[in-house]
Amino acid sequence: MRINFDIIPEFLLLFGLKIFGMKRLLAIFTAVIISSCDDGDLTLERLNFDESAVETPCGELLLFKIGESRKESLMIELQGETTEIFSSLPTNGNSRRYTINNNSVKALYRIFEGDVNRNYFCNAIPPTEPQVIEEWYATGGTVEIVTSLEEDDNDNLPAELEGIVVNPDGTINREASQDTDGDGLPDYLDIDDDGDNVLTSQEIAIANNEIIFTDTDGDGIPNYLDTDDDNDGVSTMNEDLNGDNNPANDIQTGNTEANYLIPSLNEVTTLPVSRRNHTYIEAYTSTIGLVDGFQLINSGQEVKYDVPRYDFGTVTTQITQQETGN
Ligand SMILES: [Ca+2]
Ligand SMILES: [Ca+2]
Ligand SMILES: [Ca+2]
Ligand SMILES: [Ca+2]
Image (tube, rainbow, N blue to C red; front, side, top):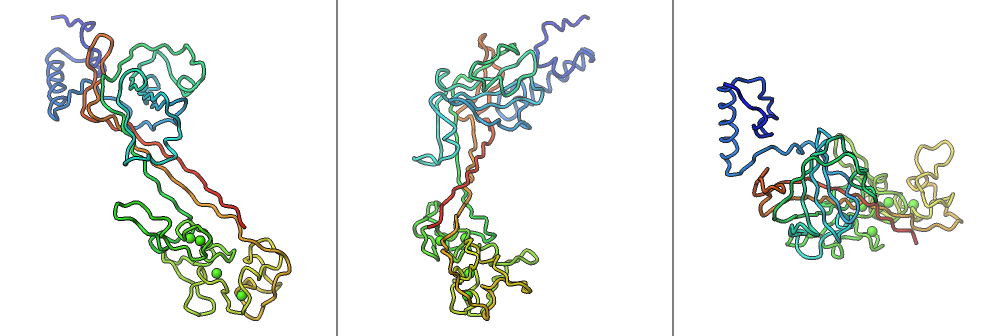
């Protein structure tokens, strides 16, 4: 018996079946059908993008992944949107949702004749090469993007120890959160919680993964919340003799500690000092899913892939916020 490989569907050829005899072929064919059906999904072919990260989005707005083979891509087009959605929270609810309409909102799977790279997707004038051999598109469903935000001052203190106030719905109440120095930045976002110009990360110590709340003058107020750390009557901020808004580097010759930690050294700076610049990190994580059914078909209405939900991947954005001193 001759097997005509030209009429065997492409997905079977992907398994390299030309080396097998007919019985083996039938056994594997049966196995493929069974494994496709046992979870209720019609998955005719695996999409090999699980190991591929979502590339940095571009344009207005293209999300894409390039398969390991470099010859296939999975793309989501959201016309009218920008990368801004990955650095802001949605105004309503927890997610942004876009109904796939194959006009302004599309999900496409493409196979190319050659390797494809970022330029193909992001150049203002798309290159003509490599050519698309096959294109499959989502018939419907929804693109769902869930974005969460984590903010941190990276001062080595967890926000729970910095008086963060969380609303019953899990959102953070910034206004109600503790602000020790009253500078408008709550402690969980403030790199200098007492506002004395010595960073909180320098006013605490870490040993064996435990936080040690140093209290130089033993007044019960840890240094990171104490504006006169050595209790010599001169505020730490004013023990900044070189006037660079950093009292921690004013160390008298022969000493190992800065003046602001030694009560016998209480010289007041004659130079103007002001609150140093503050930064904190906003880290956004956006999870992108194709939900409400993800079915890929081609122009001949052949179905390639059909699952209730497909996890496309994650986009992260990190922003450093800066507040200038006053
Ligand atoms: Ca503050
Ligand atoms: Ca802080
Ligand atoms: Ca202090
Ligand atoms: Ca002092």
